[in-house]
Length: 163
Image 1: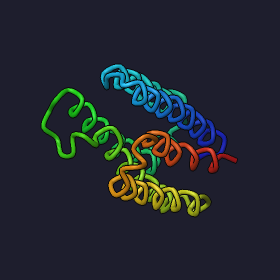
Image 2 (image 1 turned 180 degrees about the horizontal axis):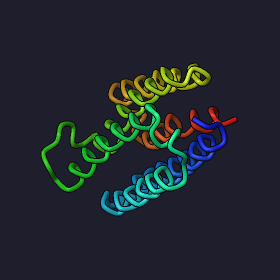
Image 3 (image 1 turned 90 degrees about the horizontal axis):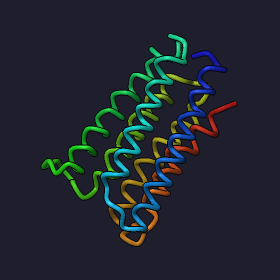
Image 4 (image 1 turned 135 degrees about the vertical axis):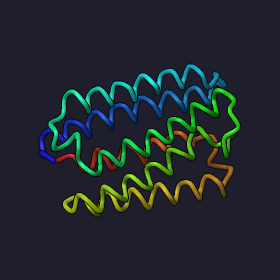
């Protein structure tokens, strides 16, 4: 991937993650419904997709890490949307964060594998995402800040990986 274009794309991803996870956490604190948050996320993910398709060169757009991210985020999106709309999906109550930590675990691991220059950052991010999933399942005391923690696992590696 070209350094400049990948850094710009990572910054957009960090901004999308910061906005999305912060609004999700505030909505959870306020007891707001999931549908408005879902609409926000669909818009943010749509914007990220447009940036990825329209504003990045083919070396970034068609890179293996980005294809893995697209597949895992697409899967997490479908799971979350289905849960919010009432479909009987596994772990419905956890659909706001569990599929995303799964996505981050797999996609950061793939990125670590295919981007040797950032292997440490992305490898640590993958392990952090998996560890956070276990912690959130085992420690209900973390529930009030679930989305902030998920956001940190999403955003911090993107910021650290930019040059």
